[in-house]
Length: 321
Image (cartoon, rainbow, N blue to C red; front, side, top):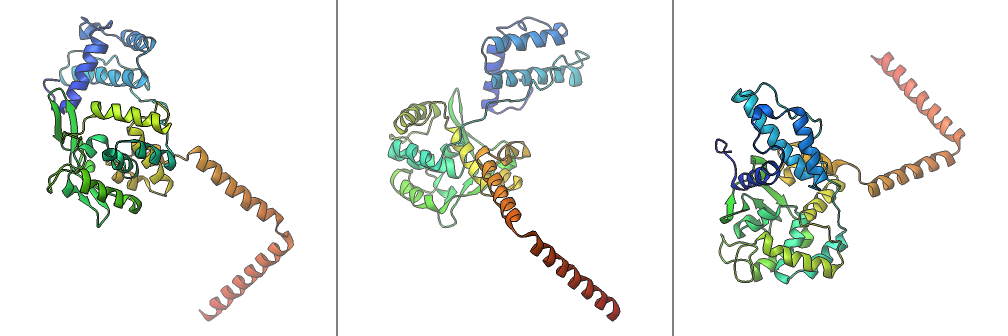
């Protein structure tokens, strides 16, 4: 990690993995050459048996694999990477919940008034929490119904820190639905910091928006609105992306809206949801039933007449030519 250019938040995450999932396990104290395929399989199995979440184990596995990639390809300390478990680095997270529009508004109304629009914007424009925390007045264009995402707030040991997006795709303009423009305008007038550089979302005492402090309010609002306990703030973004996909957004359009440089995340939302799939199937069923009720003789005659007209026209055209 000392020789890699890493974002502060990424460095802290890696340090946590090393501390919690390397140093306290069978990997601790082993030289690289002593770590074999069987060692990695046992290490991973023991983490899962200890009830470490699958996404966390996948992240730990990816870091271990990256370490050995450096050892094999760059430093040539060992000849072979022992991290060879197929699919072990993939995040097979359970499908996240998607809220209804009614649930979103119930949740927004249950929040403290200064955070109501935060919930609506997080859902219907789908920026990340850190991007919302870094949003400034000059980034909001109410006339064009757009927000500009140019930076994000990372929370590290020394406190909140502004940083650029992970890729150029992260810098983007996001169109917001017309129906929440009035909410955003009222919020800015009442709660945003003054001046073009003023933060749009701040705490009651003017402090920066922090995940830890906000979470208490989030949990309280969920309970008041009757929202399931396992719904996370990030699921608002997930909900908005689902809505955009159902609205007909293409993969490229979703990528642009989400600030993603690869298709992987966008394709998640392109899959047909169960409810939508049943709607499609019902529509197909209606069309099939209508076609089967239609008199077959008439359909045949119409087709025959059409073919005759087409044939005659073709002959005439050929003669003229």
